[in-house]
Image (cartoon, rainbow, N blue to C red; front, side, top):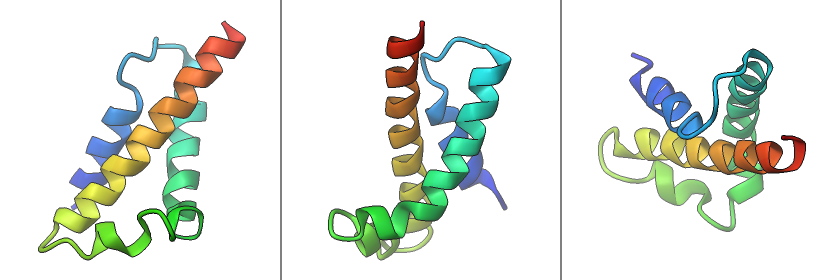
Length: 81
């Protein structure tokens, strides 16, 4: 039922070192970005991802959220550590 969310979270933590605070921050950030994906990226991707056939649209939306979260976490690592 939540396979799309699970894969999105896994993509979020690719190449991210295991530090509890960073993992907790990334987990929360993923769901914030996922919730705000429509208003933030409406002109860029918005409804295009969700209109893909079948369940691919829902899956692609969470993959996109995972990539954005990963990029943000990489920037946090670069600045903080």
